[in-house]
Image (cartoon, rainbow, N blue to C red; front, side, top):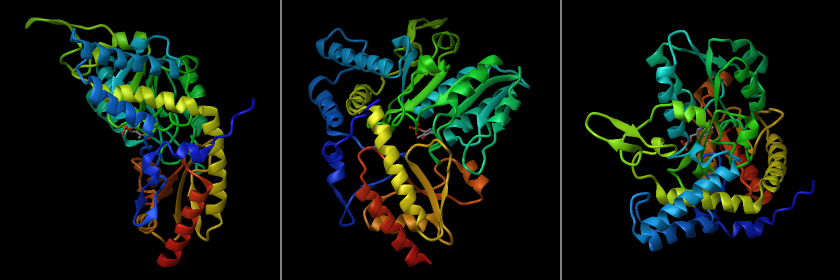
Length: 408
Ligand SMILES: *Cc1c(COP(=O)(O)O)cnc(C)c1O
């Protein structure tokens, strides 16, 4: 297959923020795993909404309300198509990944009993650990953890050993935000289904790099956040298989999610509205659809190929620095590099490179168990997007060298 080559300089013009300066230096934005930047095409959709047809949806007969409803539902269909989801009512609009996970974890309360088991991976984001611990506290279920190895890969044999008829749920991220590891989710899902367990995959970190085909994966639940894939903050989607969404109780009560309300009894609305209480992030949902259009116009194959080249280049250049160690060296990873320099604190490195206009993340990346595993307080994390360049990698490398000279 021939994959098109991206014209990065033209793409960069779509992102107004990339033209700005930070501390008198051109911005080098390498914190894409925390949130991605927003192209003008998506910003325009947000402005158009508030200038042209801001109205509440699904309720009004007036023209603005209908225009807003149509645009919002069109966005839901774009999400459905993008992730190859069978029915649009299996697309639940959320405020993001954290919301989606909590919706499922809360919903499972009445399905679990004492002694049931939930399996999570050792490399989860806190948003994919804490809700399950709370679920275990409510139900008496037990949390089991699939260990990882020093390369930052799951020890998959251990996962197979943990599975049994006690396993009711399995949770794993598609890609680790702290290390970039792409997890073998096909194998994880298939094996869980063999023992009758449901699987939730946290796709927050994968979605900007991998176009997941949710029907092919046969996954039960999948969550993403729009802000990690060129969309706005505060909006995301939870995919759930129809059979599960029908069984799960509503998460929040309120307007929009009911069929009929009396003080004696309320009946719930059909899917997806049963899980969409209250006025949603209407503009955000519409902009999420525009972000998917934008990313698809660039193409996920081309994005993956380009980011992989950038990752290889950055890995080589960084490893040439004395005392630099990269955490997370799995066979399959996205464009995330977590590293430390022996003898220097990650926070100090982050602060020094910020003075040079370079935005990287420092700390535990909401994945403290991974840091405990490596016995480190945190890392410096550079995460690359398709709008980053080799020149920016060079600036990062220069900046890290300077930090090293200042700190050691
Ligand atoms: C960002 C991220 C989350 C949390 O997403 P929110 O948008 O903050 O809800 C969860 N899991 C992973 C792997 C992430 O990268």
